[in-house]
Amino acid sequence: MLYRAHSHGCFRDLIEAGMRAGLFEMASARLASYAILDLGMGVAVWFRDDGELTEDAVVWQYSEPFRVTVRYGV
Image 1: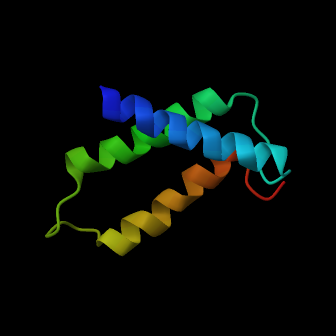
Image 2: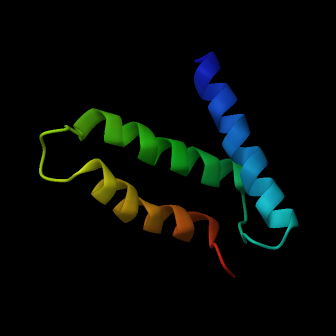
């Protein structure tokens, strides 16, 4: 639980810094950080090294929901 709280705080701080710099547009940095953590934890449930998708493919495809979540490049 402590690790999750720390991770959430790190993501939230990063998103807030991006918002201050004008890189991200987000109504709630807290909600965006939870969404990103949930995406990442979900991968741990279903990803397998010998599965259909490679690690690189998952990283590439998951980058889109991350960018949409924080509206990167607005």
